[in-house]
Amino acid sequence: MRMMHNLMRWNIADREIKAMRDLLKPDGMIGIEQHRARADAPYAYSDGSKGYLREADVIKFMEVNGFTYVGKSEANANKKDPANWEGGVWTLPPMMRGAKDEDKARLQAIGESDRMTLLFRKRG
Image (tube, rainbow, N blue to C red; front, side, top):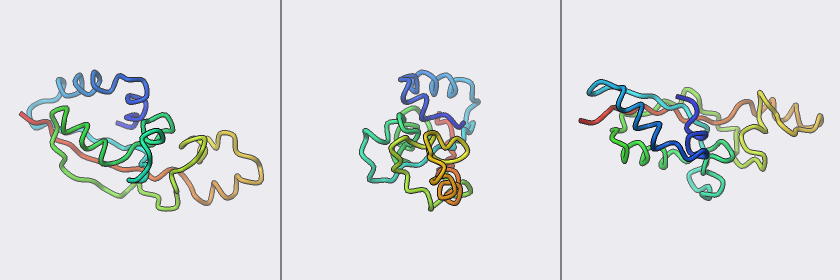
C-alpha cells in the first residue's frame, strides 16, 4: 500500500485499515511503502498533509489496529531527501510541483522521496 498519508489526511485511516485487516486471513501480511518524515519532524508536518509520516507513528498506528510489526526494508530509502519541503513531498520528482527552472536540476539530483517500506502481520 502506498497511500497511508492520504488515509491519514482524509481521516479515513482507521476505517480503511480495519477493512484491509478484515480481508486478510489469520497471519496475513500487509506491506506499507510511505514517504518517511524525519523522526523529530513536528506533527504538523508529519500528519500526512505534506505526504510524509514518521516511521514510529505508522508502526504504532498499525499495532493499535491489530497488526504486529515484522520488519522493514531500506530498498526505497533516499538519504538525500531532507523531508522538509514547504510544498511537501510533491516538490521532488516526479512532480516537482512549484519548482523553478533553476531548481529542477538540484531536485532531480536528490531524486524521489525517502520512503519507508514496512511489513506487518495480522494478529489473532
